[in-house]
Image (cartoon, rainbow, N blue to C red; front, side, top):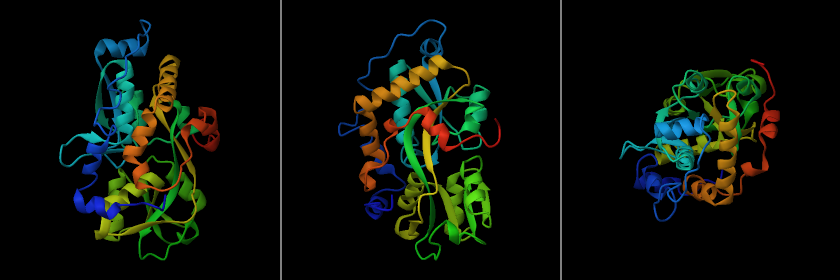
Length: 303
């Protein structure tokens, strides 16, 4: 993910990923799922209830480009997770309604019914799976460290005695405590707060998923050049969060993700939001099952 291209051109042309909204959904600008035929669902299932309601409420990030962010020009929320959510809504035959979900409230939102689904860069872990259910993985990220371009931090081993920011409720709270026990881990509500603290010199580094950090690099541009350092810390499989015990909804989501792989929708979304700005082929989520993902993050707290 270090081979990020065209950042400075993007930032010079438009503020904070505004250009990406126009690119999303393919060359013709069509909404993801525009040509999708909605399914028919058995009465009493969550899918049938959502169809009757006419909408599905989906929790997404509003400050994590390129996965979920509020376009400053239009006020619309856009990104990889948003487009995948639109495809799922099209399969249901309903309108997607987006609600901001930060790392720390994603699970409570599912548990109290604030949202129907979560697509919010949420890593599949066994602890979380004890509280909610997940779809199969739909994206594979890697944990990395972001520092200013002139920093002497070269990897996780250099964080001893340094301050590093991550989001409250993220997997990196435990990762950093385990891999950098002598670092000063600073937790905030939103990753945009981490970026602000790094730019102001309040922290020395930020740690989270590589693609989120890439978004920060693009967002800051020439005004505050930054770099990813060190080897990958973790493999982070993203899954769609859903209420615990809804096996029919889980099966529908798994099938929908598989269809997105097969019909080219996933590739279109990836190319629009991620592929054109990074070099190299990432691990593909089709190579992972839910069981594979859970093995990467075994139980440590709630189960």
